[in-house]
Length: 186
Image (cartoon, rainbow, N blue to C red; front, side, top):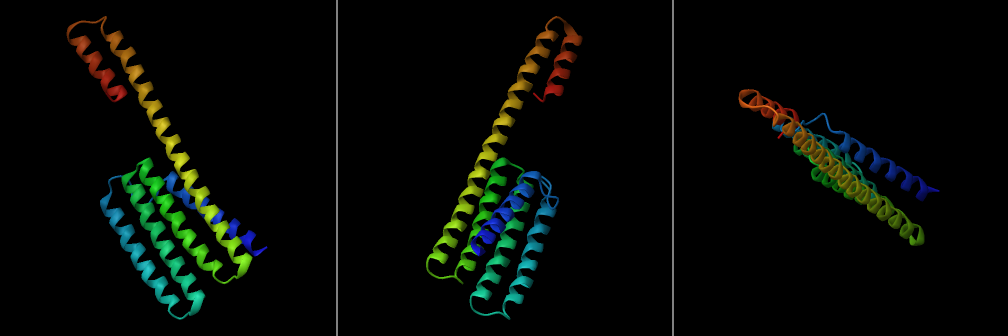
C-alpha cells in the first residue's frame, strides 16, 4: 500500500511540475532578467532555510529532508530559467531536472525499506522519472510541430497577400506589400 501512495504522490508531483512549467511561470517573463535573478535568489534563500530545518534531524529523515530542499530549489530555479528563456527546449529541460530531483527524493524515501519492498520502491521511482521525461519530450515535440505549422501557415497567407498586391502599382503596391509583411510577421 505504501509503494502505491509513493508512486501516486510522485506522479502527481511530476504532473504538477510539468503543467506549471508548460503553462508558464509568473516569476520570470521572457527576457525579464531582473525577475529571473530574483527567483534564483529567492530559491537559494528558501533552500538555506529549509536545509537549516533539516539539521535538527538525523539519519535517513535528514537525508530525505535535504533531498526535498534541494528538489524544491532545483524546480524553482529551472522553472524560472524556462520562463526566462521561453522555449520548448528550456521547458523540457526544466521538467527533466525537476523529475531528476523528485527521483532523488523518492530514492531517499526508499532507503527506509528493505529487500523486495525497497527494490519495488526504487523501480517505481525510476518508472515515474522515465514517464515524466518521456511526456516532457513528447510535449516539446508537439509544441515545436505546432510552431512549425503556424509558421508555414503564416508564410502561405503572406504569399497570397503578396500576390494580391501584384495587381497594384507604385505606392499602393509598396504599401500593400508592407502591410502584408507586417500582418504576417515577414
